[in-house]
Length: 115
Length: 113
Image 1 (cartoon, rainbow over the protein chains, first blue to last red):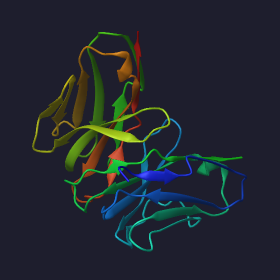
Image 2: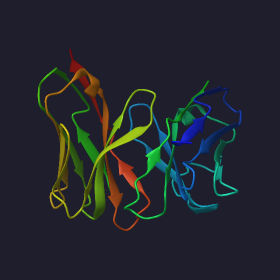
Image 3: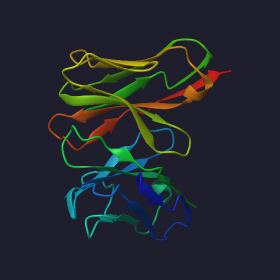
């Protein structure tokens, strides 16, 4: 597609349920990033993939958060046993390649609400 | 630890005014600094990117400056329009962690018609 696509756009879940958020990066983009944006805050880095390899997961807040990109294209962010503090917008970004000169292109995000 | 601060947190100005948004960062070891725009319910749109060796960048009515030594950047918007209403985010790319971007909390801008 023309841009980064995220689905679903909105997700409501009860506390304790598992959720899965999907990101389709721009075709051909090697690098993929996940960010968490709480209400009124800037995005915070969660994890980064280079192709299928997860090179940095230092931002994942707990072991309930898991991300994968098995074929180096689509990525899924999974949150197990959701808590109310997981409520946020989850943004995905992709870039053509690694390196600071490569701009990151952002999707519109998935707004997650935990009841 | 790099911290990015944006002042003010919110701003309302009448249409047509010129305005300045401020961003400060604690560690000058950055690769570049970027200003983004975020509309409600949307992702981030890059407005201007300033490399650490540059002093400013301009695009249309927008001008961004960077003073790396003092850890400051400003985004100047000339002749503001209601369509400029959005949240503006400042972000720095770390010199030694080139894939990580640190964002400020943003300035919510409202242009009054």
